[in-house]
Length: 245
Length: 242
Image 1 (cartoon, one colour):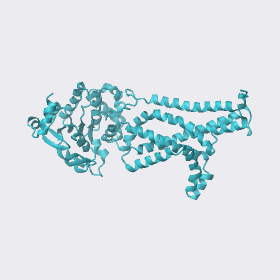
Image 2: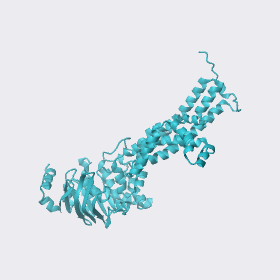
Image 3: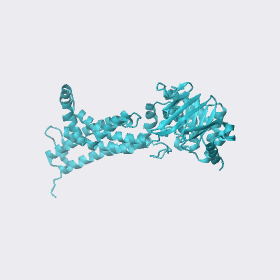
Image 4: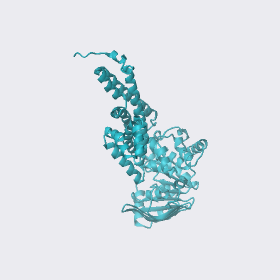
């Protein structure tokens, strides 16, 4: 193999006056931003949908179910294209123009990735709530708590603890999924990776570095959630245990 | 205090309660017994509207439970309930279990709620456990906490849904003792239980249910002395002779 290793190329200047490592750092920044913003959106929306799907109100359940069916069954890249190219054509003209011209791409990318991930979070939140005994809800209501207070103080705190491991893999996935947003023009890590390969042909070095960067992001998220899991562990309770009723 | 009038309930086409009528007066202790599946748990869950019913009416302290305009959280806050499986909130300390509803529902200050909670915890003999979590207590201890949690709301009556059925035998008495004490203090109580010793000691009346209907509703001495229905006789024979 006569590959020409050149680790120092990262410090060479690019066409735009920056160094190649600046491109990497900039990509890393966008990847982190898109991922964390999408995750925040997905957690908020996914929790709301998950709760809706466990209420006694049938129309709320129907809305939640329909959402999950739609957003879980369409590939992420297709969803992103829909937000970029289809939705602006379907909404009123002025809104469509605004979406195409003034709305920053990154906002649409975050919405796309966030709404896609929300369907998965909704599924987990629902599973978590349903794994609790029905008596927990009854106990909350019997004390005079409202349905919403029962979710807020009784059911959700336990449901989140139960599904935290599943949420962890979803939170790690979002970094990997964020790579897809390059297709709609986000200058994130994968975009920079492709660009650097084209410019330098130092495929191995850049692949190693980008792989490590993605690994580090996912790993940090994993450690963070493992920390939260430890901090929120309930003394005397076997995790995943559930009441008999 | 609790007036149950011609209550019927169906799950789909299956009738679980058939024309149930009874009253519980202030300071009265009524024991509800009957074979499993007879509808006794369902009936007392109708009293605080945890279970809806399709026909009849239940009036608690002058408030109609089935009226859609009734403020159910407010009504439920006045009716204490103790469950078969304790249903303490596992992620909260015992103190938080005792104070959450006082604070969120009654609007008491945290100090006031903790003060009240600890007094009641002391009363059920568990003051030392205040900082622990439910999973660190025995079943009997958890059920005593659950009773204290209900009492912390200053209820006007208490519902017990098989409070000792999930307990190991050696823990049953510690829970019954608390209930007996409550009865002696004049608490209005409706208890679904098979503990006939408890019924003998403190009940004023015993209701016997079978297949969703109230088959017998009699003063305690009449019930144990000469149950009129054959089904009640059979039931008593089965649970008393062992």
